[in-house]
Amino acid sequence: MDHLLSTLPPLDIEQQSDSKDNKTYLVQYILNGRIYDGQYQAGLREGRGKQWWPDGSVFEGNFRGDKAQGKGRLIHADGDVYEGEWVDDKAEGEGIYTQWQGAVYEG
Image 1 (tube, one colour):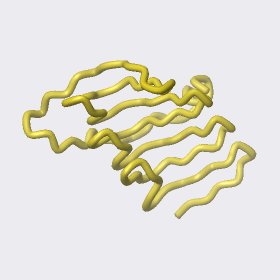
Image 2 (image 1 turned 60 degrees about the vertical axis):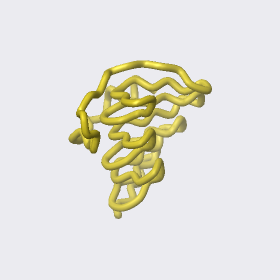
Image 3 (image 1 turned 90 degrees about the vertical axis):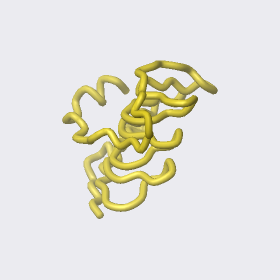
């Protein structure tokens, strides 16, 4: 999966954080088989980060309040890719979904 991630163009996102003290730390931790590498604050994923699931899926993008929030990209274990907007850990709003076979949906 990291090979596929390295073939995609860089994800163009800005850090989105509402933290009042603006303290964020880069960490890596494992929770329930998931690996997270990114900014973390007050016990929650906060800011820019990347998360890997046991099935091989990878998400990179912004987190707020321990959930994917704002712009991000999810590479499914089967090779399909969704890049776009996220709200509360769900793809929502504008985005592009590309199937590994080449079909593309934009909207």
